Image (cartoon, rainbow, N blue to C red):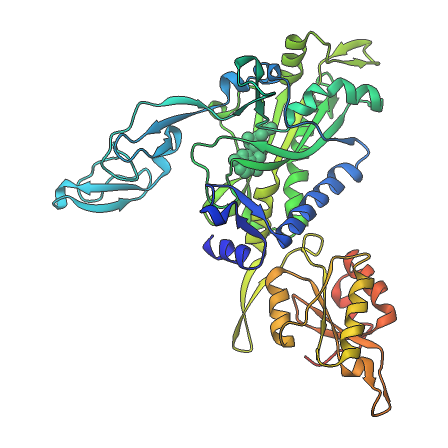
Length: 490
Ligand code: GAP
């Protein structure tokens, strides 16, 4: 993880929030390249789940909602984690995660020597199991107390109970309370889904691991409503749709470059299921911290619509034309984290390779996700015609793709910098492109395109650049395009 954190800071992906004041724990800012990457992840998600589907619509609900929403949804009473404190060092832990943590042990069998013992294991010397604080190894722990993860705030100038509201801990509830608005305004027929991307907030007891678990994060959530009375191939429609969404979401991460071997599905045990869920499967990624949840795909049944209907007194049903009766739809919820996805895409794309005896760091990001699509580089920055041509090219390409111009180092270095941030293509303008007016030599008006992954280079006429990049970014493979042009010398 350290390599990724360091790359993110050095190359402008992610900075610690309020760093000049010493930082604030588990809050992160997305830098110039990070915001492009995250926007691209969200754009790809929205395009695939909303724009390209006939059965989905979008929504952007407010972060602050009526406090009654959180009572009805169960968050006020149940959105808690058990918390314990160390009486000596005052550190705080989630009681249910204590056994997973490595623990510090002053072993009586070795004259009180200090050891780090793996999570869940006994001391190999004295056989003792952890009872004290896992961090300092000395303090007793308080009994577990339930701690609500919602951030409380006040609306208006007076901090009184009547003004209490909460920062939403999930975007989902904004969709449930708007169910009827969306249904009526868009004249939808079941099954249909509503998608939303937005910020959520959780006062996590143990946040950490960079952008993996933070207090403020972005979710990309779908609530897909299904008629529970319908059957597909003799099976309940909600169960079939649940399986379809698990497959679809599992495939999505691979479509954007995550390797299959780094993804797995984890079925929730009955005891682990959220109070509203009939079945939940997590899509897990092999993060540097180990296999962890990237996205949860839950069958929330009719729990939320029924709860909000009862609490608000408003009907949240669907009129089933065929059966001539009202029904409360079931809902399948694929719920992904935008920040966690960014982390997974970064980790999976990161490679260290050896090229001609030197280390090359490359982010093999999918072109749709890469923060910069094209870097235009002048081979010689002392030649005004080269610089002018390169800058003009950048401006023209930037109308369609995120393109940058860089002349702050020699060409080899510039290529390495672009590799390190995942830029799929570099365009180099050289003497051959512009010619030499003093010597009466005309340029060939061709530039070199270099592909990040293979490092192959081709010479392409400037006037064909837009067409070539159009093909490359629409999915035509590099080799098919490169076959039409002469290779350039590396
Ligand atoms: N509406 C269902 C729901 O919120 P969840 O499993 O609690 O389910 C869904 O959250 C996704 O949101 C997670 O899979 C994860 O990607 C992301 N997420 C949850 N808590 C997070 C946190 N503290 N920091 C970053 N991402 C988080």
